[in-house]
Length: 374
Image (spheres, rainbow, N blue to C red):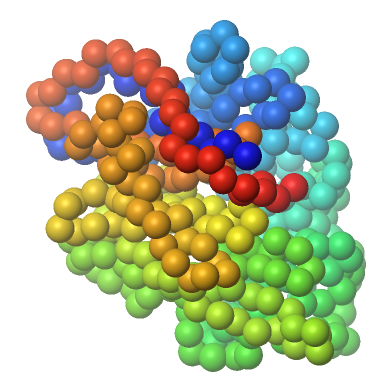
């Protein structure tokens, strides 16, 4: 199987800036049937374009109104449109419609995130209700059910089969990873019974986040650092691998750590989606692809981690050289059609003018037997 490298197509319009800042262009999805790559172009925190690149015609089209600020992009299961979260509202944009429609939620919830589709009408997500973040199941008819109801935060939900996997955080900020039956109940229904659950990672003071289950036997999660206020520092995250043993117990294995500058996650220079574009990519069997910030070189390095041998390979120089890149920072690795695509961070300086660029480069780095997971 051939593994290719691509830098996503970039459109950078003429800019005359009075201040130093950065723009971010990065891939978020790929339509296998239409052969289109979807990427976000963040020009500022309140100017974000959702663009579709047609690989055959090499034409880029903007799919949303400039009034939208999209995040959490998801292709619809029917492939006839997509969903996104726009300033706290779940919206759907069908390709045959001019405008996006909002799925109204009449219940007292806020801070919607981690939305994923179950089928063409049903989805699940996390939102805050009262003092806690809970997990809910909704549909396109604005009907809402709850999946969690304990006085704890239920975060980063994953649906595998008929089970709900999530990270639970109590009032003392202690975290654990659990699995429980997928049992949606009416939003207004009071449920005093304790939901049976399997504890996969025991309760501890370690701040856990971004659970990603690959199957009912394997998954990954991150251990977050302490919050820092100095924007010139870096956050160090640790990636862990979850595997269910033959005796049905769960074992957690630390894989690697990676750094992200604080300024990209907090403050005026941050990405609107925060850490989401920096999350490791788990879509290739036995491999993890991620970026790690090298403070000495002032750049992100593209790395490949082999889970079985626990070895790391640095792909940065080959990627930069073959894509004719020099000082740009690459990030947000995604894998579509056995091809690695990366986003770039474009540095803008005072009174600089950048003319429109549209570049597409591809190359074959090596041949291997990588298996992309379904």
